[in-house]
Length: 424
Image 1: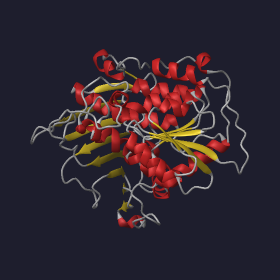
Image 2: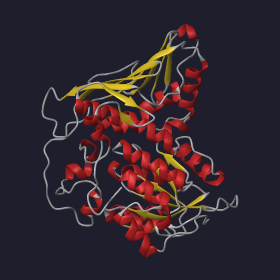
Image 3: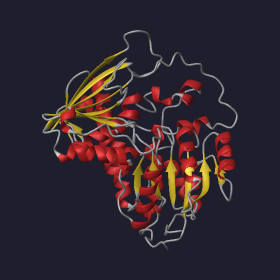
Image 4: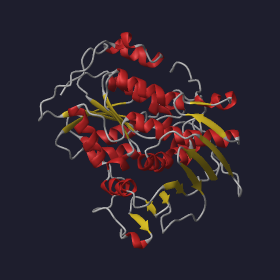
């Protein structure tokens, strides 16, 4: 399959992608063709061949409706291992721009550190690829909006890695929420364990085969350390702790269930009350959001469980309550007559059905279960919580304008500059 027309030549693409997000006229004009024969295979590349990238590869390799033509990682041993795993005509690259320059690739999976998601997704759209990008969508709210704008401008299918949207268990739970048996839902929440304790950094020489400068990309330059390379979520240059990691999943379920995705205000507290964590995150976090019609909480604490669930999402209504994680959902009181519901086959990271939806949408040109706007709004809520933690006061949010009301100090957190030569 090759439905990507009017591409840049290789030299122009590499030049523009390194320096800026170019205007549409510079990247080629027109839309990609939507035509695809039913039996044609979709040509796929996977950028980022570490933990989550390997989960994607394991789920993609057995498929008969696609062919994996390229893998890519800034750490050469990872893409070499991925080539061996995939076999066939698969080729490996260290620089993602060389993948995007290939005319024979239709869709790209980006399973890279969080600080790269924005540029990867936007460059993928501008290269006329359909895109699967992992959550959280961005590290700032401005970035996320730019991804949405580019996805719409280039008419790309962009699926965000919020795979719970495609899972039957969660679809059944949301049907209960929408069905009215819980009454009027006035409170919701999500919870998980504390952020981890990293320990002090031990800077040193990057391992052979790692392009550390390319790994950093738009983030500020710092010396290599195994703590940053292996635990990037603990550093705010690249991520936002478990709030942006798991919160993107769990808060998204609240948005889905209550059909509201724009908080009115947010306030937060947190701290490291035992020892120095060695990371940029607070160990313990409490956040409260007000939405139109309900409040939502995010909590990270020790020994935090609801009905044996150490993480999850909850809906509290006037007639009952529902608690869900990937193992099951539980509805109380028992008098509502809804027994505990479990998936037919449990899989901690079940991404196959999410892949199914993505590839179906590539063929039909419909929007996927976790379309880019959905992913942006769920990421926004997480980023708002971290901004409130930094400001230490209640912040009023205009969800349409995507700015804080009357608080220019807080608005400074909505965007941050990139390290040259990367630009947004």
